Each structure stands twice: as structure tokens, then as C-alpha cells.
Image (cartoon, rainbow, N blue to C red; front, side, top):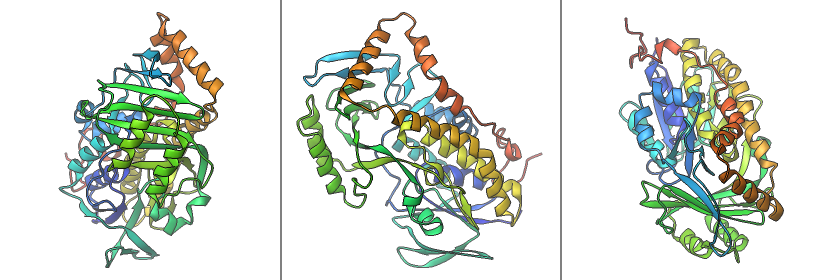
Amino acid sequence: MRNREVLISGGSVAGPALAFWLRRYGFTTTIVERAPAPRTGGQAIDIRGAAIDVVRWMGLLERVRAAGTAMRGMSFVDAGGRPLVSLTELTLTGGATDGPDIEVMRDELVELLYGATRDDTEYLFDDSITALRDGPDGVYVDFERGGSRRFDMVIGADGQHSRVRALAFGPEERFLRHLGMAISVFSAPNLLGLDRWQEFHLAERKVVGAYSARRNTQSRIMFGFSVEPGEVDLRDPDQQRRLIARRFAGVGWRTPEFLDAMWAAPDFYLDAMSQVRLPRWSSGRIGLVGDAAYGPSPLSGQGTSLALVGAYVLAGELASAGDGNHARGFERYQERMAGFVEANQALALSAAKRKGTRFGNWCAIQVMRAMSRLPFRRQLVALSMRPLRRAADGIELPDYWGARSGLVDQAGVVDQ
């Protein structure tokens, strides 16, 4: 098999996972990442269903489990901080506490994926792609820090606001479906003294909360609120902070303290919740994976799992297609992933319909209170998780070249 060179834009989850599998099949991989180093901070993310199998086949399952948040439950409080309800069977960020899923902090998963790829993948940190020219003999790429290089393929794994997608497919407005909400997450000291616990306060079309991170040495503060399309300025973090400060002015509980922490947070993040929908995930020698292609939004709880599964399938199909047949590889990748993507994106659309009105918040608290008193509450949680379970398990993954059993070596040759 001829050694093929692939440039991957994005060094978070989908990019390194794709590089891992491509290297297994004999490709040469380069990752370009705008950040100066692997990104820190970020929210709790979930690995479910088929994605757990992918992590197992990567040889990372035990390390990912060890890095898991091991959340014990969550509670809701009123504006004065008085407890309204507590649950040990369920968390807002991770679902059932006793299920097979793995919840891990995003930056800890990024560290593990970087560690699994840094020795055989070239990383170009603090750089980005400025131009792409797709030709018959490869893709010519211009970089922000200067210079141009040719690659056999370019894959955009650079998130919801993908630069590769914009350059190769057009403006993002064509592909983003706005869901009417925004979420902000950032690191702070463990201000509430939480022990693997989450605590939240619901207000009119708003939620504010904190949960422990990094084995209780930190917390992640979360603000969620309704927004109109275009209300969040992606280019101006200070405007984003001012927007949150206005929206949450006068909200009770520990909100003023959280707002103070927001201004000092080095990893402040805010974005509107949107879903990425494209008719095709490839054009010529350029393809997309993860959120860049089919980001379901955080409302689905499945963005990370889609990224991991998509990376595995894309690498396997490109390898199976053979030399020079990238078009067939991209086509088979979309065919195999389409139903899985649709089922998981539907989870977010269903969640977006539930508006956080004052009455809706009251009803949610009453339902949780009633559930907390029932002896069969774990069975109720399991029942409520069934749609997510079906979506998470909704793909049969091929054993590309013996990938499951580790038969493929780093040269892409099946061991005998």
C-alpha cells in the first residue's frame, strides 16, 4: 500500500482519533491546530454505545475509565440556595450514574488522544489553514504562519465553525440549524466544595450551575440561556461575557460569584447551540468528520461519540477503498454513517422543543421530586434513557483489516 499523506485540521477529539486509525492503515498524518498546545478546559463529555467499542479497540478504554468523572448525582436549588431536589441516579451532563456510559472532562480525553498520536503524527500547533486548492494530484494548502504544502487528502475535524468546511463547501450559514439556545462553560476553583456532584439553579429560560472536575480540584461553571440567531458574536469574547452578565443580572443563588469567576477564566467558552447539516461530507479530496460534518449540538449528548465513531469509519473506509480511490472511501463513509448520524441528531431536536419557562421549570422539579421518592426510580431512569441507548448503539461497525483485534500493524499490514 502506497504511503498516503493526509492533513487533518483540528486537534481535539475527531482529529486525533482519525489520525490514530489512519496511521494503523499506513497513512502519513499531519494535524494542524489553531491553539498553541492541546486545548485545556471544556465541559464534561460522554462516550456511549458504539463509541465505547472504538475506544476499546484503540487500547484506551481503561485509561478513559480511570479519567472518568464518576459523578454521584445532582441537585437543584432555589434562588436563595435552598435545596429543591437531589438525585443520585441521574446527572444533567451525563445521564444515568450507574449505566455503561463514560463521562470524562473534555480536556482529559484530548490529553489521552494526543498521547496516543503524538509519536507518529506531525502536529502543527498555533497555525491554521487559509486556502485550499483541490487538484488532480492532491490538495495544495496555504497556512496562516506561511508556506504551502501538498497533501493527498485534507480532512476538516475542526468543529462546528469549521474553517475547512467554509473554504471547501461555503459559508456556515448554509449548514447550521440554530436551536434557540447558547451554552457557556469555563473552569473555576471548586467554589461550592463539590465532591463528584452537580448543582444547578433554574430561572426563566436560563440555567446556571457548577460541577466538580479534575478529581474535585476544580469546577466547571455552566450558563445556559435562550438566544436569537446572530446574538452571539463569535469573534468577541468580551461581548460574549457582557451578554451573559446582562442575561444573568439579578439571578439568585451563587450566580454573582460565578459571574465574577467568568471574567478571570482562561478557558471561557460560549457558543450558540446549533446543529450541522450537510447533504455531503466530502468534495473531491476534501472531507469532514465529527462536528464539522454532522455536529448534533450538546443537547444530544452524542457529539463526542459521533466524532469517535465517525473517525473510525472514515479511516476504515479510506483504507478499504485502496490507493487513489478516495471518492469511493468518502462515499462508503457517508453511506455507513448516515442513519447513525440522523438518529443521534434527532435527540437534540427533541430536547430543543422543551422550553425552560417558569412553569416548565416548576414541572421539571416536581417530576424529579416525585421520582426521587419512588423505590423503582432507577428503572424509570433506565426507561427514560432508552431513546439515547438506541441511538448510541445504532450502527454496526466493521472490523476493518482486523482493527478490533489489533492485527493491523503501523505499516498497515495484517499480521499473520
